[in-house]
Length: 135
Image (cartoon, rainbow, N blue to C red; front, side, top):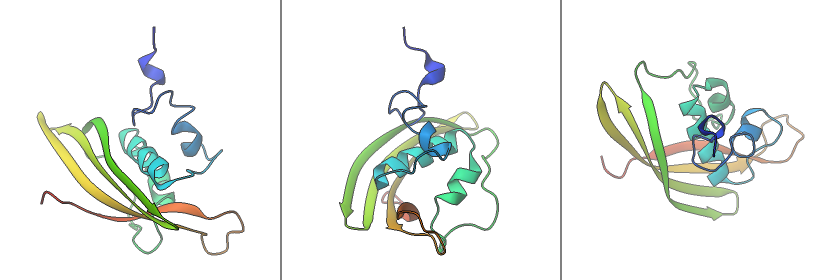
């Protein structure tokens, strides 16, 4: 029987083999889709440091990212992933509950792949921003 404790919040299987390897820093997300899924998992797990580190420096919030009190993430549905060289979009719907009320976040996220200034490692993907088609 499958152990729910080991399940990755993004729905991609075992946490350690899915988003856990990116959260630990042992690997970087190889695609914008993998980064988006790992960022969703970071929101579920209240991992603000990972969210800051994977946010593009041009749009990165200066304040710490903390979970809103009473927010519970319920699931992720990826609708589209489209990459073109060093840029990509990922459209998704994330379901959550707050104050006893079920909600949905429908976002089209933009990502870029580049090196951080001063970094000598390989380019990596960063979240830039998102638009909300249903608003």
